[in-house]
Structure formats: C-alpha cells, structure tokens
Length: 198
Image (cartoon, rainbow, N blue to C red; front, side):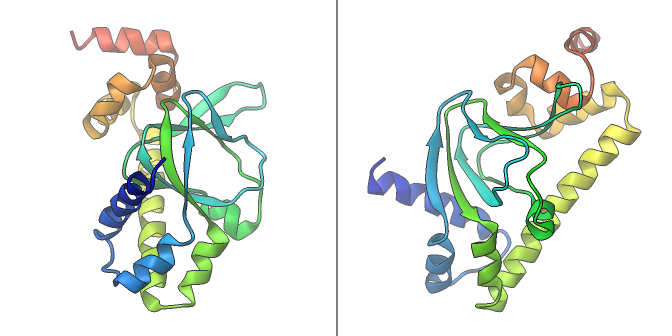
C-alpha cells in the first residue's frame, strides 16, 4: 500500500470524526499517530473470542463480522461493521477482560486500529480528545441499546424490516445465513420471511 493510499484512509477517518468534533491539524496528527493501517483478506480473522486485545477499529473499506460463540459451539452474529464505522469493546478494556466476541472479514477489508490505552491516554492531553471519547462511547452505547431492544421487543419480521431499512447495502453483501444469525432466526425462517414480501 503506497503513501497516497494510506493518506486517503486517514482522511476518511478524519471526515467521519468531523461529525463529532473539530480537531486542529496538530490535534489530528496526535490522534492519527496512534492508529495503524491494516488489511486482511476475505474470511480472515482479526480476533477470536477470549483474546485479550483491546483495540478500536475504523473500517475504511470492506466488511467485518462480530460474532459470539455459544456454549454449544454455535456462532451468533453481534454486528456487521462496514465503511466509515468505528467498533471496539469499551467494557472489555475498562474491566480488563478478554474479548467475548470474534471478528472476521466477510470481504477483503482495510481498517485503522489503535489500542484503547493509547486512545484513553489522549483524553488527558486535551479536553477535545475527552469529548471525542465521550461522543464515541455515546454512539457505541446507542447502537448497543437499539440492538438489545430489537432482539427483546420485536418480532422476526420487524427485525428484518429494520435491518433492510438501516443497512440496505448489507442485504446484498452479507450471506443470508449470517443475516439470519444476526436476526436470531434460522436461515429457513429468513427465506420463508422474505417470501412474504414478494
């Protein structure tokens, strides 16, 4: 990956962060310095459940699947993270626990990664970084709460309609069995559900 391409990825992240805070060039350089560019191929894994790696990710291109493994060995999908989106486990970092989920690329993926400890260290440098951390935490918590509400209070049909409304591009990018797992239903049930819309 050449320097120009790497620069584009950092600019992409800065553009997303501009929705939350206005960083000076100096502040941006401090933040960018803790992130490293990584690329992985389709089907490769970044993390397996139980790893003690506390990182913050920003997806530049591609698609990641976050999943849990149940006691019976069955995988259930927690989230799909695509372009211009952050992801990471605040709870695991703050409680110093192993990661409960795994992360796999569903497409060839380029992402930026930073350790949570480096990110939190910046909070002490300037209030703008603390504000950025708060905005990111709020965003992650809102996403988590909406997901929990969907699983606990909505029927499968409502969950599917919400999924295609909020993530229309993922309907064609994510295999059906992974979408079914995310919705908490079987692939057969998802096929049956989709037929009701034809």
